[in-house]
Image 1 (spheres, rainbow, N blue to C red):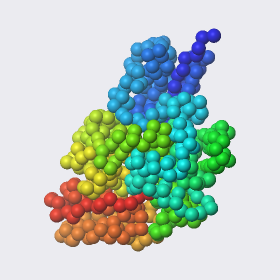
Image 2 (cartoon, rainbow, N blue to C red):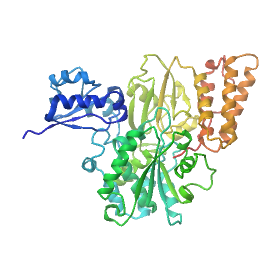
Image 3 (cartoon, rainbow, N blue to C red):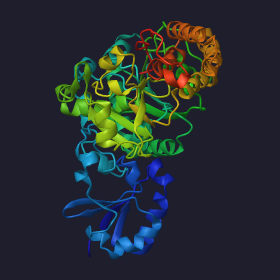
Length: 527
């Protein structure tokens, strides 16, 4: 019997949004039993989605973006043999966008069937967990600490220290909580992981559970991610049936049970204590700290809270050793980060690179400049509450300390590009308005400051003799929000506002900068 040719069509939400299901149906209908159709995760080259790959002796060959109408011509041109066609992108791994990356956490992304346990194990899956099972708690935590892994949700707090705190806490019950409430604009690496490689997240959380002595875990996923929720639930069921989680992890006697919970659409629940409130069935309102969640978290018990990429980084650290991971990056920023290119960008997508490259390398070398073809004016880094980075900072290495030094944040790695038609005063106003809408309302600087901030920006842009006084008032207001807010919701809203005011004063109707104060220094976010 002739072996079937393997053809890959992504099941990622981004690919589905542009017709991947229809392309898969068209291929199956036209090629019939001659192909084995695999629904893989996305490679993260979103401008080429739906990206169809075919397995050939030379490797997997990519074609994209493919529409259902393209299928007959592709098959006629020899798609199943990797034949030439206008949509042929070459051997997938040799596409420069991919070949120039350093994929550690995302090394399986787009390569495997996300729900296949056999695929996952064939690509180094569970190797980290198996090694962790042969180690004691202190040894696991030492590996994570020595690797230099810091929280990938934005705060960049050392993961090993957080795990050690929970491990040393005395309690009958401990929890592992994954913050998958990925609400920042221009970010999608968490979603891609949950949809395209869910077992790496399950493995990472299980390693954390072994490290701290937790037996229960929760994946808190934003409600806007239904495909991720469905994939996670199926992956959990398969992992439990195979013994990777449950009453006895791989027969070790260690119990770890994982559950998926959906959020209700509140941005503030990306903050770890508001997330815990929501997870416990209450309204998502920020808690005052101390006590820290590591000591008194979910249901009042010691809790490890990290985001998706933090947990997903643990398996390769345990599998290959701390030093392997630590050797990537610069300064105190070790390892890699999946940067996500969005906004007005020609080649939007995911780029996993070691810390230390620059924005210019990202948006031009990988992103290809703006989609509009116009000059780039500003780049927002770190989500909707991240600073707008002007051109004189585009060559600063992307690492946590270098960005904090000029009032920026690397955050979750979201990069949103704006061309020269963007109005930074309007974008600053949007940041204040966003904060007013999404504030939990617990603290006055955030609740009232954001509302007054919108009004003050409107008065500045209206001009008039009171404009200088209104600028000073806006700066004072930002200072109050920065230093007086309970969490990063209000504490980070000054970042985009001050960066817009300092670097793009003309958009506010100001002729020259008015002796700007030092921009906001980095504040703590949920890790």
